[in-house]
Length: 265
Image (cartoon, rainbow, N blue to C red):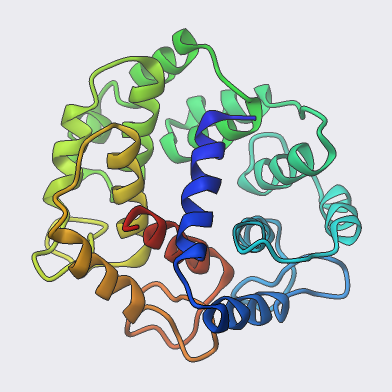
């Protein structure tokens, strides 16, 4: 199992453990309410989706909740596979953990490298157990070689965070990524996806996790502001949403909420 995945799960569980029993139960009920008759979990269009199923599964594991593994695996096994797509990466990732069988990762890795997509490469790397550092270094050079990739200030925060984690895995300097991530934090709490924008939950969770992974100690006094922002993203439907102004929550942002809470504990 990937060391990054192990750390993700540990951080997620720490976030869940910090909640009251009532809050945990509310989250579990809301997540299970997204489950479809086909064994998958619903996305924003209320239909089962491999991407959102991945996040619902991660949340339920972090919350130590009971879920139907056989129905989940049956749904993901039946999903169409197009090599290199995010849906295929998500399905293969869950199935590899639940079945204990290592899935074919090379198509996902090569596709992400070809597209210059650091976030997709990060997802693909979770499936593999541990990628050789030389391959990660090669991917880093390719994905951040020129254009927008060479100007970190122009990258969205999730891609910066993925870059920081990958740079650490490659054994290269993470300071430029961490410095730019730190520029995205707002004084009131939370991180923005781009300079000059409002904070959002994905950016906050990704930035805090990446800084922790890169061993960049975050000031303790920032925790209260970041915690307050994360808590403001917990919606009335029992799930976390992308920002306090969201109309409803979803499985993906519930994962980010628990992950962000775990980085603050």
